[in-house]
Image (cartoon, rainbow, N blue to C red; front, side, top):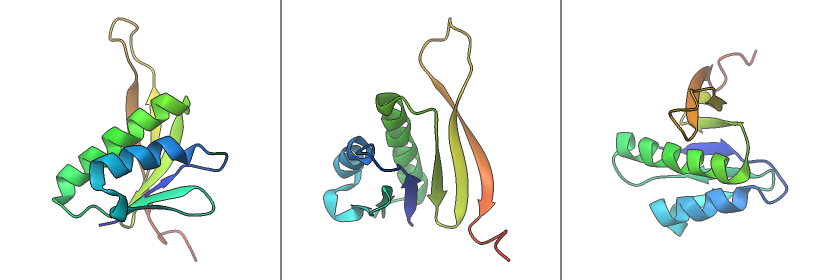
Length: 106
């Protein structure tokens, strides 16, 4: 399994990379020149996806970003902040499925 996160340039990837390294181990995390962070978890896929999305949510909170694109294998999602009642507290996130990689490339 491969999980990719569009972290962008400008040093924003650093906190996500650090969190991924603490969760998955440094040998399973990389970042490219465009700021895309990639992790290849070596354990149960459902748990790995949950751990990755928890880390991504923490990263979005830290960097004050309101959305990012995440690819899990060939499936892409937009993770974005959603409105919630002030009484709930904290942030809530919505996961919008964008489709499969290459699905619209013709």
